[in-house]
Image 1 (cartoon, one colour):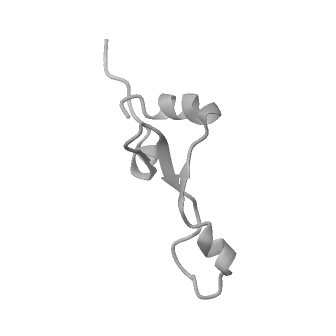
Image 2 (cartoon, helix red, strand yellow):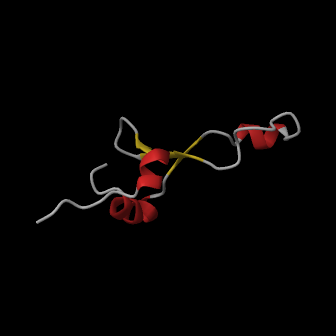
Length: 64
């Protein structure tokens, strides 16, 4: 049986933490930070994927 293919866009954006959770960066938080509010910049942290969405990520990244 052939290997399953990983989603190449998800490979670049998602990683697994040390405890086994899936973490990713939120979008639109890389540049033009001077005009963004402090609240927006504070939300610029890694997002831990909910357990309800874990099944979707496992189909995108079968070997993660």
